[in-house]
Image 1 (cartoon, rainbow, N blue to C red):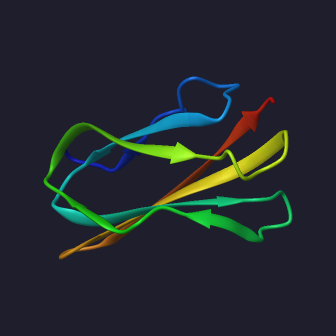
Image 2 (image 1 turned 90 degrees about the vertical axis):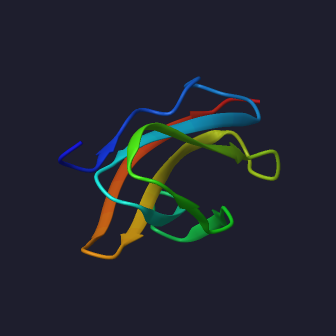
Length: 93
């Protein structure tokens, strides 16, 4: 794998949990942040270390949030580089 790649969360729309999938070009500590459309962080997953590879997943539990559209950001801190990508998801209760 040569680059960091973030996939669309699945399922989307979701209630109340969804899976965020990504590929890593190097081992990295990863966290997922869920923000409102104004950029305020509403929840953060615990930091976890993942090896380089494809199809890593983080489960996001949004049971505390209201229905709506949110932005999620995956931050992966590797030895060589920090990777960040964002996408949107929809919570429907």
